[in-house]
Length: 428
Image (cartoon, rainbow, N blue to C red; front, side, top):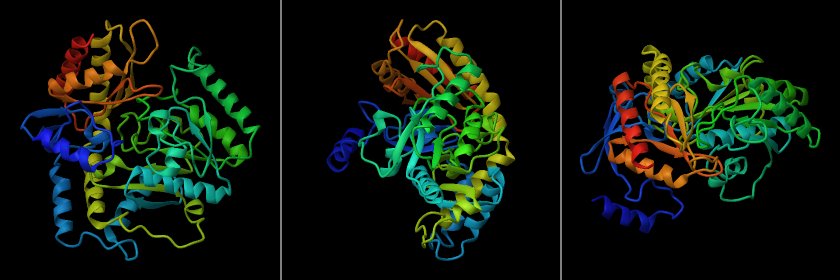
């Protein structure tokens, strides 16, 4: 059945629409931290639809909220008052840490980042944007234009002038051998020098932990240090929290809070996990920034009632069950377990991350060169063992991405680590 569906897929879908595995997988249903394929085989899901199934598959509280809302009205657009949208916006604004916050809902993280760029460039009257090397911010024309990852950048054309900054990857690049404090100081000096050669940019956009880039991150405090330089130029800070938000990192509710000593970002974008699989994205910004547009705008599908009902139920479950705390506890156990099982593997360069956002970087033994072939082989071997993980990376795709739903249990963490251990051993 999967082969027949794959043939149909290839006849009607674009060639550039990426699929995992030589024999692609059709997922038919899920429950908790598990999913099933069309042949009835069960898998432990350590990728959650690209960090989107944040709490659990088929979470009863979310499915009930969606069903009840769908029985009333599914959609009306933002041209009409929408109680679930206002209620979720109130909660997100309060949780954002941004004073006098306004919230605009979209249907995806790509659209959220697009909106943030529109706001920042309009507010600052500049089309110059700073972005991080190895970054990824979405699939749209403007989001591709600020993406610092060649594997996900299909065109050099862009409506923006983008300048790329050092710092998103701690263990590679010209400052990798420095200690954390000196690394931050060097990146700040590089930023200061860069800004001496250009007009003041509209904004710096940065993922606190780079998602598609392989779950890389700078030392805590880098973006707070950047903030001092940016503020001197009137340049805004946009935190792309599409993958890091809602407590996934365990230590913080938002990824930017690891860099928050100089206050919250001017703009925060979010998506993925808040909908637990429903299409929700959004932007939070100070009122003066959000209200800077001088033309009408709406969102046909952003904030639609059924997705807002899902978001409200999902956020309530997350907070009431302290899933951020669970990510910290179980994620800490999982990362240490993965470090233990990979300690003697010469092809594992680094196990990194925090909470339930963990990267395992694979390189050719004895070198720093990426090993995408082994990454693909480990992905397939893990699937054969009953575990789904993702992959990513910068110069080449050679990092495994481990990001289970935040309700992961200790027993499931141990099971997943054991399967991944077996997959790594089988591909040495």
